[in-house]
Image (cartoon, rainbow, N blue to C red; front, side, top):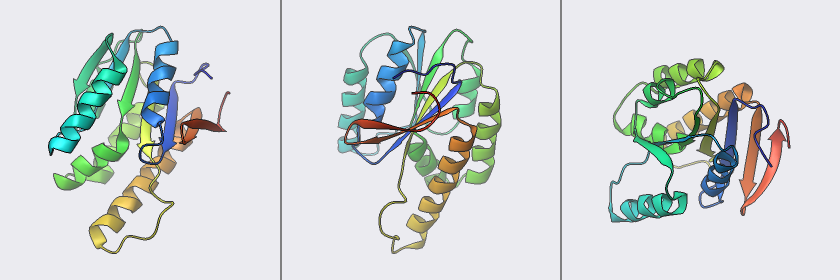
Length: 175
């Protein structure tokens, strides 16, 4: 599986589904210089270990931008020869929510940038709408925002891939 002529590829999946590894392999196959936009923040030791594991998994050869909020700036800064891995929208939304930033404003800036990105971009995002309805308003708001941004990203993307148990399913675009 490859990106073909896709400028925007969305890779969706549940937690621990293998979506990041799949997206990394798509990027590596492109043979372009690789830019990694990391949205994760190490809030605790478990997250520190997860970030370290992702760094080891990726290996060398990546320009890494650790950007919990202002991802649009890093996308715009990319060279047209590069390819971007944005991992992940779910943590980015969490960061926006926790910092009390306008999710709508930041989301619209991202979507506007993705209409004509400077180079190909693979975006990783969690599909969170397949579980039960959360019992508190903050969680319900998060699920609403995550579902909305995923739908809008899928509309813009030329390729959408859903990962289940490490197995890719093409939802939209070239195989």
